[in-house]
Structure formats: C-alpha cells, structure tokens
Length: 431
Ligand code: HOZ
Image 1 (spheres, rainbow, N blue to C red):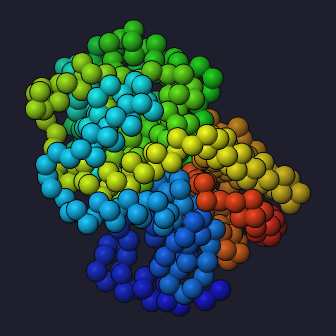
Image 2 (image 1 turned 120 degrees about the vertical axis):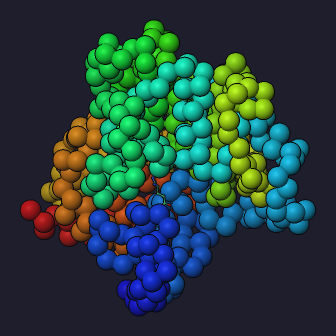
C-alpha cells in the first residue's frame, strides 16, 4: 500500500503543528506507523492522500452516524450557508434543535448549545458547583470528559493512550478537587461519599465508557450512582457526548432507564460540524446566565451551519428501525471478531452497545480501566496495522471505541471480517 504522500504531509505538518496533528491520538503514536492524511469520505468509506480507500469505524470519533458526505446533511448545510455562516444572535433553527433534543431526551428540560464536548462537560460541572455550592467532583478512572483542567485526572482517550497520569499545567489545587473511583465500582463511590459526602457537587460519568475502549456499565451501577447522588445531595451528570443518539435515540439514559440531573451531548448532535450541548432539569439550567448567575458564553454557540447539520441528523434518526440496524451491525462485528479470534487462537473479548463497540486482546471481562490496561498492546498494534493494510480504518488506540453508522452495509461488514481473519492470524504470531 503506497503511503508516500501521507508521509510527506506528516513530515510537513510536524514543522507547523505540534506533533503534526490537531488532536493527539490522530498521530498514531501508540500504534506506530504514519497517520493517514484523509482527502475525502463518502458513506462508510474514506480515501487518503495516496488514494487508498478504507472502511471507516472512526466516523470522525462518533459524529458521522449517517456516514461521510451524507447528501441530506450537505444539502442542509449548503442551505444554511447561503443565508450566512454566523450571526452571534438567536435563530429559529437553534430553537428547533433545542426542541428536537427535548423530545428525544426527556430529562433535558432546557438545553444550551456550545461548540465542543469539552465545553459541554466543563460548563455542566460549573453549573453543578454553582447550584450545590460544593467544590469537589467525582469521576471514574479511564473516563474522558474532554480536556478541561478538573477533568484531566485519571483520564482515558489520548491521556491513557500516551500513558500519562495527568497533564502538566493542571494546578494541583484543581486536581485535588477531583475524586476518582474505578468504573463499575459502586462500593468505591459509596466510600468517597462517606469521606466527602457534603463536599461533592456531582458525579460525572460516561454511562457506557468509550474512552478506555468500550466498557458498558454493570447492571445496577448507574442506578446505584443515581441513588447515591440523590442521597447525598449531589448531581448526576451523564456525559453522553459519545452515547447520545448513538446507543439509543434517547441515549444511554433511555437504554438503561436512568434520569440524570444534567446531560452533556456532542458528536452526533452536531452532525459532523462543531456543536455540542448541555442540558437538564429546568430549575438547574435556569441558574445559567442570563437568567441566573452561573456564567457561560460562546461566539459560535448555536452556529447556524452546525445547527443545520445537527437538525438533519436528528431528523433522520427518527426513522423506524434505525437503532436496531446500528445494533445489529455492531453486534455482527463484535461476534464475528470473537469467532475469528478463537479460530486464530487469540484471546479477545468484545463489548457492544447500540452503534458502538470495542475489543480487547485479553480474555476479559473488562469492567474498569485497570482491566482495560491488561490487554496485549503488541497484538493490538499488529492487528491495527493488519487491518489498515487490508483497507479497514480503526481507532489508532486500544483506548477508544469503534463506531458503525447507517452507511455500513452487509458487504462492508463482510469485507471487514475478512480483513480481520488475516489481521488476527498476524496478531496470533505475537506471544
Ligand atoms: N479524544 C477523542 C476521542 N475520544 C479524539 C478526538 C480526535 O482526535 O479528533
């Protein structure tokens, strides 16, 4: 497979962009090799600068549930663009999007649009602190909620991929306010509440962790968090940036029957353009400026192009059978991978929730970040490289989830599993 153009572009990028990338995991650091520079995408496929085509399971890290260059989304964005790209003033379309979110996620009584998942989680935490008058927050190791200071403690995603405990630049005084517990460990959370019960403003959790690979909640875990929060006067924030509109139309809260106080959305809600949101109980959200004292603002919040892409995407997700289709496709891949791994004599466990799935090179079960870290790194690297050579683009880190979209067809899944057969044989050679 020719990769000379990507190589040249990466060398050039490194002279003007730190590490040659605008977000760390993209650099392929933990899998080795050269990142592919992407020229275009259509449906479930992307094409790199050298003309190589891949079946894509990154989907821009989650937003592209309809696939690349979806004609409906392009039409909606073109229509909005012709009327102007940004006003910094209210528009009818953003009200429509807020109403569409309310309909899909009933716990969201009011919603504020922002431009990235990081902004959504950071603002939700500020609101939780403002509303409770408390300073500590509780998060789970291996969960990633964007790169705001208080959240870069025991974080997943790129922080886990690079194997760093946190980040220089986060003052100890901030990090000390973030209490950590292992994902899926209710007893640890109960302990934290016994110690700091009247100081914890909120728990923030990815209801299906997607930044340490894909790790679903154990039965009772989310329910237990809800009870502990209510008991101790803390707020429950579900970070559904990844799971929102992905594991069910109403997100993980619909799938698992949990009512959070606040929810963070991103990725799918922006239809592939930069939009995210946080929302929840009206009495809490009404404490946001201008009605209340908790401040948050943004020049491009509710940007008309992003709102148009988000509205079209949410509208299309109302079609009957959409989530069954996503689930069936993701489960077929997860099951297929397990069967092929068994044939190849490789220990592999998988997880899947709606349109997201993941795999670990170990027998499992994987319920926490500590479990996730026990995977066979070198096997992952070989498998990743083998898949890439065979035209399948997976997240370049074992600590990320894979995404299927409505553009993946049966033949794409079959082609992927055929590629996996060869790539797993190659991974099997590593002891
Ligand atoms: N941290 C993001 C995925 N969990 C990666 C974002 C990106 O590289 O675009």
